[in-house]
Image (cartoon, protein in one colour):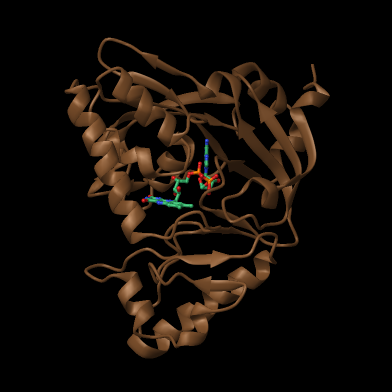
Length: 291
Ligand SMILES: Cc1cc2nc3c(=O)[nH]c(=O)nc-3n(C[C@H](O)[C@H](O)[C@H](O)COP(=O)(O)OP(=O)(O)OC[C@H]3O[C@@H](n4cnc5c(N)ncnc54)[C@H](O)[C@@H]3O)c2cc1C
């Protein structure tokens, strides 16, 4: 059996769909709607040997101008569903954070208010261990259900057996995160809504809005703020031009649409060098840059 042509997109433009509105093309992107699509695709040896890139909502990914020549995977269909069981929620990797947060509000499930303000998908969250307002996705996770392309099988791993850390979640080579099993705790709907809006307000005040950006460029080093290190290391020229640091938050940049991804990468390296020269600290990128 082969996958239908409707599943394959040739030269998928990451610039068109990414939050940065910049980035190279994915030569072969397969849209995967269900587990059957997955096992058909990865039963092919010519597919298995190529490098793999799974994309979520492209809010934390920049593909360099040369593009990605391996196999791209975009989950849809069955993986965009949420199912509630008596003591957990099964959330598809393609579900968007904002959608899950609003869904939980409707069902009076508390603890997912922080996701209201993150523009990613659950797959991207689990990969990155995304978080804000002192909460991380790992705090809510019971287990991760993933597909291993090496043996064409689905596995489930309990969070207790996974080493999630600050912005480092489930990052196992040759795997595709399919679902997260999440905790359920019931709360008061009014309070849930209030918290969602409080978080939204904080973000509107502290971060740039309605611009092309990727969230934080760098992780915060232990006991340090990346934005402070950046601010104290650079000059005013970094705040002007087609790719510039945000005046609202120095660990964010804003860029003009369809600008070279390689120039963005270069801009990031320049910031990194300034901080290294001034503070002797190498900032680690939070943004995923794909060569
Ligand atoms: C305005 C703005 C604000 C942000 N604020 C925050 C914040 O407060 N906290 C925070 O943590 N992040 C924040 N981010 C970053 C981003 O939203 C998160 O990292 C989010 O988790 C990325 O999800 P995504 O679906 O967009 O992932 P993508 O960017 O598509 O992918 C990110 C990584 O996850 C991998 N991946 C995605 N899905 C899967 C899957 N199903 N299986 C295997 N690997 C997968 C990709 O290969 C890639 O390496 C912000 C970004 C923006 C633009």
